[in-house]
Image (cartoon, rainbow over all chains, first blue to last red; front, side):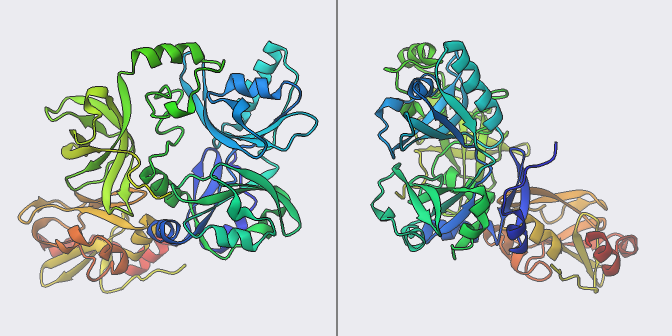
Length: 364
Length: 127
């Protein structure tokens, strides 16, 4: 299958980016260096092209009910211009994907835009259409992934460059709030959301205006490499890695995103999750820091101090901000308490590790 | 993008360089290799006194995004290890041919170097 290319592929190439395949897309992984880009976002501001993220648009008389029954959070709490993080779960309460649900200004009816992960837009669209038909709901579900580019402007100084390109008072937006804003005569959806643990905005812009709008920002371009180190430090999950519907099925409670589950709503997976909530989980995602020299990587074994394998590293890196090797992984709950000593097996050698509270870095 | 490829040394296809001085062969990775890896954050090297065979794996260099094995350009005994890299692995990025060197080998047979790529041949490989 040919890789999908974001509208800015050529511009990134000219800027000297290196590329990687991610979720079926050919995306910039690094512009200058991961450490430079990471530091820009932690200390100042950086801009990411995240046009590989999906965009699904749902409207109609039953749009709210459809969203409510297919996502784990309480959609009815969203006013126009609000957003929320949610899991998309199956009947067993297993995470299929995670997403941000935005409530757009009403069209004829309540209207939503939600952003599933790269490469899952088609299967998610199909899921929404199938359930709509099964439940006989009146809602239109459009996959608009190819109509919108998406940029993330992130960092403690993110307000200034975003306000500089529009007349709207975006500094006033609260965290997770969103609104339409005109940028260079183009209507864009601007949200105070992100995936870095920093303040910042995500801009959903028409594909046709992507180059024009990207070029308005004179800040450090950042690739998926820095996006990964930033989100690991912030303790944020990566679909396909920290949970994977096929190879590492996990419930929101195991993955530490129980805050995005509202059991007072009716959604697919709700009843199983209520049971798990009552009985508790056997394994949990924890953060850990390696005490010995080494770098934890996805797939490495986690053992207890006796050397018995008790879990697997799902994400790991050398943290640019902490200058320490850190990672995420699932372990039995009895090993999940911060301060617990574990070991990570790096190329056949056991390296001492310590469970740390998440996030590793609390910046917001 | 152009990379430094000093012609006073030989290269492996796996991007290590080897510089011989009176039977002692100093080893590191090329400018091209460090650029491909990006920010180097960890280097694992053998101990002094270890015996290596030609093209035997002797260690690992890790950047934030990748892990790469390192191969010995010649056989012999490890006589020095650049311990500065343990605290400052970024030297591999900054000075891959100088302070970013990794180890020195007392070569069993310096003629083994003749089997490696010349600077011109290596340049063709990465072109």
